[in-house]
Amino acid sequence: MKALPDGVRAFSHTQAMWRFLRNPWVTPEALAAPLRKVAHEAVARQDGEYALCAHDGSRLNYGSHTGKQDRLQMTHCHDVGHELQSSLLLGAEDGAPRAVAAQNLVTAQGVWRCREAEIGPDEQSHLDELGARTDWLER
Image 1 (cartoon, one colour):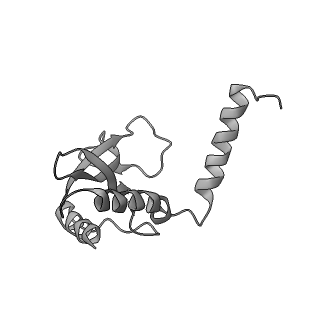
Image 2: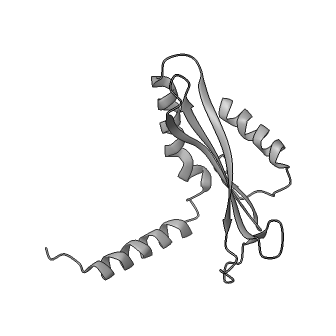
Image 3: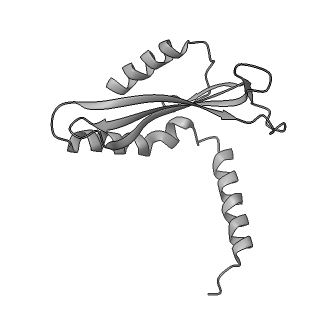
């Protein structure tokens, strides 16, 4: 079988990704299922009864991407984009990363949480959301 040129192959992968993401069965919760499985396996494999969990937030600035309709104004009129909230499991014995335990993406539309199938409102403070995420992680 003859190999496809790189440009055609890249277009095919892009088209496949677009179809995948437009599928109504593809939810943040479903996309995160493999991450949860890896996190559970990592905790089960480690020595001891504790794992550490580091939480962080990052701003994704899309100030020049005026075509993006879901940009969130974060602090001032030029600080627009998304906020990514991540929770990383670390080994308690050595601090080495084990798995991404949770991720949220905050947009102008609301919050895409890996623990929910649908986008939700952004009505919690950062600290309250972190508390809810930590409770979910502990369960």
